[in-house]
Amino acid sequence: MQHLVLTGDPASDDELIARAARVLRSDGLVAFPTETVYGLGGLARSEVAVRRIFEAKGRPSTDPLIVHVAPDWPLDEVVATADPLVDRLRRTWWPGPLTLVVPKHPSIPDLVTAGLDTVAVRAPAHPIARALLAATGQPVAAPSANRFSYVSATTAQHVIDDLGDACDVVLDAGPATAGIESTVVAVADDRLTVLRHGAIPVDELRSVLGDDVHILDGTGPSPTVPDDAPASSPGRLVRHYSPTTETLACEPGFVPERPDGSVCFLGYADRPVVLPPGWTLRVLGRLDDLGEVARVLYSVLREIDRAGHDTIVIELTGLAVGLGRALDDRIRRAASGRVLGPVRS
Ligand code: TXA
Ligand code: MG
Image (cartoon, rainbow, N blue to C red; front, side, top):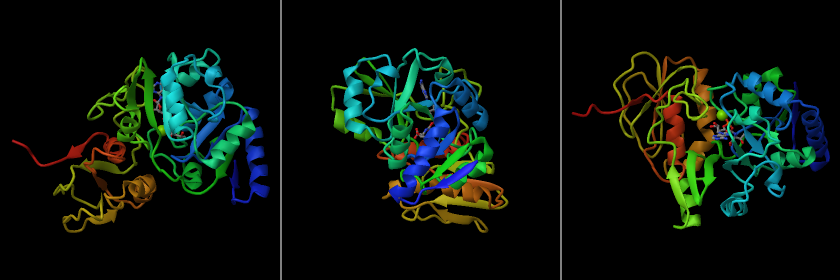
C-alpha cells in the first residue's frame, strides 16, 4: 500500500493524483478523500476492481455501491433516465454530497448495484476527489473506506487502520470536512424518496425545490430492518457505523443510571448533564453547531472505541432540523437501535 500525502502544492500533488489515477485505470483500488468521508474507489466498469472493494471491506454483495462522477460528465453512460428532476438536482447540488438513485445504464455491472436496476450516482465536491476523477476519466465506484458495519473513515489514518494493504493507494488530504455521508435520494415521477439522511439536510432540499416536488421519507422513524434483510432494503441495517465497544444511545437530556462499569458518555456542551459517579464525559460539540458535531463524530467514536471503556452512551441530538436527522440516524445505528429513555407508563 502506498500512502501518498498531498501538501496542497499543485506541482507535487498533480503527480501523486496522476499516479493514483493510473492505479485505478489498471483495476487497482485507491482510497481518496471526499467532502463527506473517505471512499474506497475502483473503476465502476471493472468487475475485478469492484469485487476487490467488496472483499476489502468485508461487505456483503447485497449492498450496492455509489458511482462517483465529475459534475460535467454526460450522465447517459451511467444512468438510463432523462428525468428533468435529475437535471435540476444536479444543477443545484452537484458537485456536493447528494447521491441520486436512478435507473441504471446496462454498462454498469450488476455487481456494483447488487443486482438492482437502479444505480446510486454522485459528484463529490472535494478538490482531490474531483482531480482524481478528471485524471481517471471514468466513473469510480466507492463505498466509505471502512470495514463493513464499522464507523466510517474521516481521515487517511482511519482508512489505513481499517483496510491497510487491501488498498493499493491511500490519497491523504487531511480530515474530511463534512464528516458524515452524503444524503441518498431515489428520484422518480417528480418525487424524491430519502433513503439515507446525510450531509444535505432534507429541509434544504425542501426549501429549494418548493412544493412542486414531493419529498418522502423512506428511512422510517427508526431503522428496524433486520441485519439479514435482502437487497430490496440495502444499506438500512440497524447495526451500522458501529464501534466495537458496546454502544447505547439515549434520548436527549436523559442520563441513564446504568450500565455499570467504565462508561464514556458523549454529549453536548450546550446541554449539560449530571452523570453517575465514575462516568467519563466527552463533548461532541454544541447543538447550535451541528456541522462541528458531524465533523468530529466518527473520529471521536474511533478514539473512544480504543480507550477500553465497557460501554459508550451517546445522547441523541433530538433535533429534527438541519443535520440533526442524519446525526441521530448515525447515533441510533452506532447503538444498533438501542435507545435508553425514561420508562413511560
Ligand atoms: O458520502 C458518501 O456517500 C460516501 C462517499 C465515499 O461518497 N460513500 C458512502 O458509500 O457512504 P456507502 O457504500 O458507504 O453507502 C452507500 C449507500 C448505502 O446505504 C447503499 O445501500 C446505498 O447508498 N445505495 C447504493 N446504491 C443504491 C441503490 N441502487 N438503491 C438504493 N440504495 C443504494
Ligand atoms: Mg458506508
